[in-house]
Image (cartoon, rainbow, N blue to C red; front, side, top):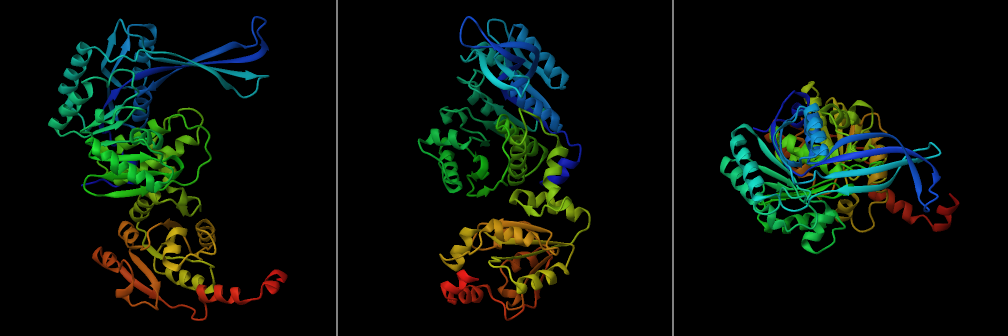
Length: 497
């Protein structure tokens, strides 16, 4: 039985994750630039401090540890000082590194970033210097890793793969890993490398390419969410059980072999730094799935976490409380506009505190007194009124090409300004039935011009023990009639007004 996402985040659940992939060392060199070299027209960086952080699969490990997962890392490092630094950083985070192999003749992957300030102002990256080995690990190293992985299969909940194409997942390593996991009934989730042959990931429970990676794998460009869904469907042909295509500002597209397909929207963000967003998504997704969440709930939370990460400078692991605060800010701070992925966590918390959820829906194009009166009556039926608003696309589908007059963002903001409304969510389907099933309101409210059996979603609400309530309307108000009256006014009079 799936654990609700908010319960999972609130409790000290410690899922066991085996992380396989390419660990790196990120070295940051900070300094000041106050002169140009006399030897060449280049700035001179006067070093002030250095900082070491885990990168690649190491970054994912640190994110999992911050979330609270018990993490076992399977990777390789070189027999060099950088490899020893990686070991100390892993120990500081209490990450199990018994399967981090030291290979004496292999260099630890290092990404060194030089960050300089001019006139003591904010630092900017001047250069990145990489040292790495990208050849496949030796068959002896692969055998040692797989032997250790085989021994720990009965103590883990999920295998997470962070493939950066630095050697660990090349050759026959990956298919052998998949075979071990499948034999043990352990799911495998992989973040694929760009430009890889996706046949490498055949047998995975799920992979999470971004839109550019998925597009390159298929030889196409992905510009819209619907194209993301179609790309995810095509990627299933590589022998995958499910695919999530991450679409940055457009959210995520998910499909699986059973025919499920969903788009997860993302709310607008002030993007500060996209570094680490992909690692954050795969970390939270892995944590949620390993802890018992169903796939849709896990994607919703991972979607929120990826959005949070891009608002922060650099790679900054998130705590469960960081995510909970983001999920609940709609009801906690008066910010009522909710993204679809915020619904389940927000409603779970409200229900846990004994709140009665009321839902109504509509286009609400040209908000008028009839709407307000109906919403006020709806709010009286419970403790939290959620208003579902048709997207611009679904309004056009229902009302015709001339509608809406006011776009979805404007309509949502006007509704959120009403004191009787507690939450507003935009839905893209022509029918609200799917969203009603997802919300499972205690009370579904519609205008009394409809009989109960005509209310879309009434079967779902009644099946879950809820109620249908119809409320009176102000008969003289109609959006369609108001628009017609406005259009009937001569242009000169409208301009004069």
